[in-house]
Image: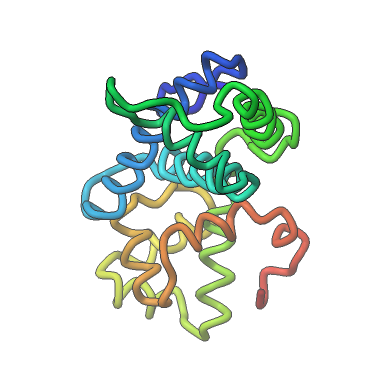
Amino acid sequence: MIIKMRIAIDPSKIGFRRFLKSQIINIKNKISDYENFPNYSFDIEIYAEALKVYNLYEQFLSKLSSEERLIAKYINYHTPIEKEPKNYHELINPIYQKWYDIFFNANTYKEGINEKRIGKVMRMIRIYNNRSASELARILGVNRSTVVLHENSDRIPKLNYLYKFCKLFNLKVDDLINLVLDENLSNKKENKP
């Protein structure tokens, strides 16, 4: 699987080790960059994708026993003089299999986000909170046409816009992204979530 961050997550055992040693660190750093510098123009799809991969990683960690977590932590980082954890060779294959199942077999990873749904979800949130498009535009310091373009999916909102929008409605940006990724939400009417 190749994600927009230009990281190729390889399903092999070597790819598994590479993921734990460096790729997850790059993904964490990308999420941190987006969250700590919301005023920059970042690609929201990359942020959403990084969150999705990190959520898969957390699912993977939740499936591990405490002994298996020590081995995953050892793979992630260890000093040259640090000894392998007990049962390393017996447990490495089951750990790899759990990682593989979550990232490749369970079909939980979806390619990016549906850009057209961002605006629809934002409209649902706005309507649910009894705000007009004009009122939202005034509060966010944009033209009403900008709000309409975003809600009609004619323009993808920049991260700064999303940040202000989420702050207004007491959401985290990743909560908004998770709503966009929620397949069940697509079946609901656009009046109220």
